[in-house]
Amino acid sequence: MLDVRDDNAAAFDELMLRYQNRLVTVLEHLVGRRDQAEDLAQEVFLRVYRARKRYVAGAKFSTWLYTIANHVAANALRSSSRRPEVNLTARPTESGSSNVLDKMALAASGAMPARQLDKAELRDIVRAALAGLSERQRMAVLLNKFEEMSYADIAVTMEMSPQAIKSLLSRARVNLKEILEPYLQDGHKPK
Image (cartoon, rainbow, N blue to C red):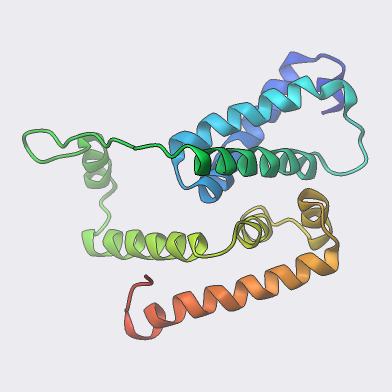
């Protein structure tokens, strides 16, 4: 980031390559839509670039990046609550296939269909469980588990104390357990 601050375009490209996929994943979990998450990631990088001259190397770059992402996602969620959107999904083709490339990739992988279904179901259950958390709990869990950030870094990112983050994550774990336990014990999907 220090090179970006000094107007090194190649350094900015490198930062985008390193963080873009992870950032989109976190944003997708926060806002619930992949296409919106991709747009928000672009907004985050645009803000990083605009603020490059003001960057101070006090905390890790990822902490600063996810702080910006947290603000951008919160703004997007507030905005979407004021003006809801209707999403239109693509219609399947005449053969009933919604995505031929996905099916070809699955067939080429040699993956067993039952195992693929199990993984897809579990992924959907975990996403539903994460969606059941409050916005702050979801962000803390995503940063802790998927980005492997420390409590101190999450605290800086979310503008809270490390003790508050510890408490927030504890409540989030209890809530996730309550949501996931019926599925894990009896196979009942969360509501």
